[in-house]
Image (cartoon, rainbow, N blue to C red; front, side, top):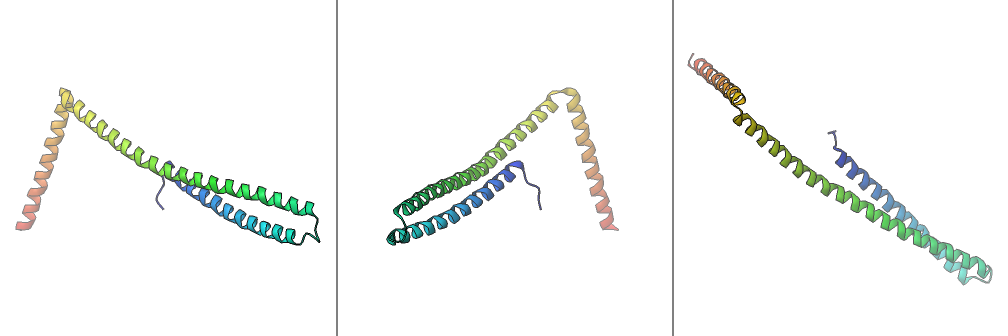
Length: 145
């Protein structure tokens, strides 16, 4: 597996956290619906249960419903954070590429404005040209034999 940049790891972690939160919110919503169903049926048979018990169940169900909404909102914000991290990666990549190009231009300018560096660079070009020329000559000899 290829190594990840810190930004990639952060985005993946945020996506995973958002998924976990979303799943927890779904479980909570299911539980809330079940409690609401039980409270409704309890209220309809309030002859057997006291009104106080039914009221307490309704309050508990209401609190749980509020928590479910909070969990869902938290999952959505975490997912938005993952998207933002991915967008940040795109921006940082572009800035890094521009900085590298700027460094390269700076090195080139330094090479061609300093007489000593220019001389060494021209010598390198000459040696490289000689190597390529010799290589081509050897290839031609091999073909003619």
